[in-house]
Image (cartoon, helix red, strand yellow):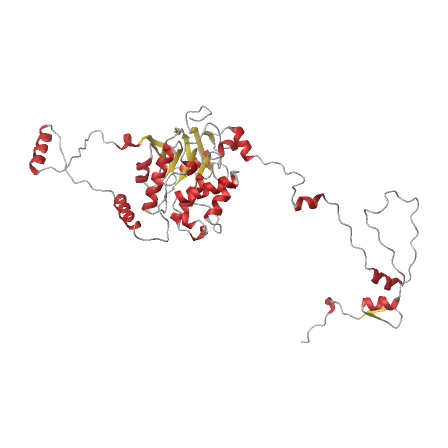
Length: 418
């Protein structure tokens, strides 16, 4: 149970989102008067066809969209609170990851966002890569991954901060049956460890296998909600499973059922295709290598223990940025504190050639006297040697004694003859 005292991990009250048209008139009613309640430590299946309002609801829970009216509460507060946001893990429908980063660099990047220390990041990265079956592929760039492998690293990214609430939008999309089975087992174990999971998926078989309760949306409204087994149960039918029976025993059972005024159908049980597929691949993995994703190791490391609700003070200590001492300031900060450098002094030899006199020694601004003189010193008039000046300017003397420029400007270059 959350320390805030709220009885629900997710709760919405008349949550509504209406997208207006160009003129501000209501156009699309994405979510209408949604009252959603997700308990702690349960897996809730949030279902519905495309455009039913599932993703819009998730974005309002995460404060990525502002509701038109109503309220959305997460973990006893709002996701605008940094202490609440730090306890949420989110896997969007599309994995928006940097293609030129490796898997390890990606997880390290998200660990830095949550302010995790370097030793903690390294330990969690190793644990998560083992858990999702990418331990041998951690140094490959994300851009070389298949879609299913990107979903695996996306799930690891959502778990890097050890969240209390995990929101997953199509977590098994594009994943092979082995990976799908592993992710489902992982979600069940996370729920047993105290996590709350909101799962959106179009793969109803996956939802049926892992979810405690489901809610089905259509047209922005909740159509039905309840425990999975109760909603799927046929209350007017009874199923009996037995071992092998002789033909005589079968006929006797049928006669008994007919005397009760009911009907019966006897068939041989059939495995799911997923179970058959997993069994075949499991046998092959024992003897044949592969260059793709490998089976995950399941829950381990920091996810193995039930998470304790962190207090606000501890979170502030983890994410607070300590002020940098002046002695440890970087080179950029040290450059700002240094005085502005003076301009370089003119070359002495060039000045002597122009004036014919030795140049006076220059005084740096730091050595200059602080007291101002009563009268500025008289500037001596220096005679300039014309021959040296002409040599420096690259000119020649004209008939009238003026200096002509011998180099033609670039703007007056002769044009090519037509």
